[in-house]
Length: 261
Image 1 (tube, one colour):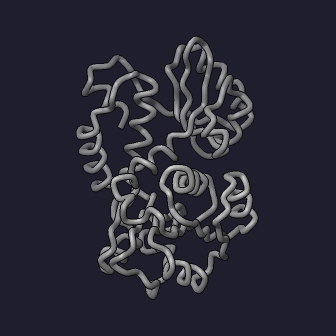
Image 2 (cartoon, one colour; image 1 turned 90 degrees about the horizontal axis):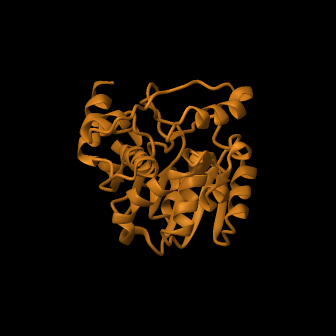
Image 3 (cartoon, one colour; image 1 turned 60 degrees about the horizontal axis):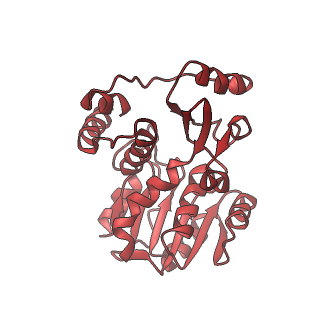
């Protein structure tokens, strides 16, 4: 994604990957500043652990409790969360379908925190139901974000189906249905999906998950995870370079790559 964008804009940068062990995280943060990096992304298991080692953390990232993007400027490393921004950008065009209505979030991990933050802070849903294997995590999330209109239900199909019936927007933040387990879905085959629903799956591999196929068959509006992948990358790209990512180029490259895989 990033290297395609750098090439398209003739920018002299390279995006590459490094495996950092947990006990090497503090040193890595310092080394990346010393080596003159513009910034970097952070993924599991470092999104929360990195926060104490940064020079500053954006208010939204601190509230969400996770950093996925770091910008280095004047030898200071500042952490941001572009996941929540990406979810906002992906859903905003459809806001009229679910604003003022109930939403259901499947999962209670880091991606769920970004989704719930975006729904509560920017997208004006009336209330949020969180289906979680750990009700403690769900409750902690609603407390951290000071959400008054929230329900926590067990991640069991009976309770999920009941929540689907009352909600307009369904967001899957779990890895259920991700490659290679493409025949799995967080919703049962008898989930009461209707044309009035909007279903948003953060998984981008495969491009169309079993959940999205189910929702499509029911006539629901669907959005896949590719848009979130692109939007979170575009936000980071602009933070690092000061330039807009060439979205058309990047989307084409990713679609072709993911179709092959």
